[in-house]
Image 1: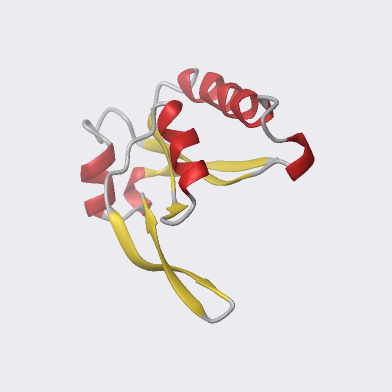
Image 2: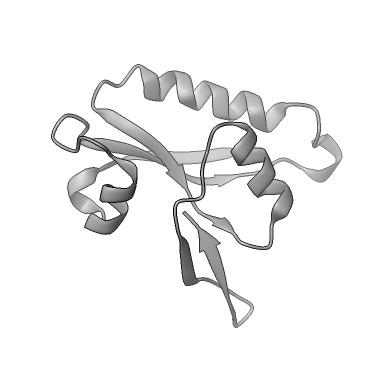
Length: 109
């Protein structure tokens, strides 16, 4: 499963836009990947890669979209490695982004 949405640069924090979009006048939209996951027994079969590649195709067809981005919890090394393999980079660490069972966790943008 993958869930994402196009978002307008004007609706995002300016610091994030500065980190991600080199030309916000030309690229007025970004694609935010909200969640990506596969059922445990189906992992390692390329399903998540295929889902992301299909999103990338849609993103590349949108000339107003300048970047795709996501947040990932800092302790999920497998996810971080997966995203970096597909070309994502860690731009900044955001403190206390997630609240899970009353516990705060940092994320990477």
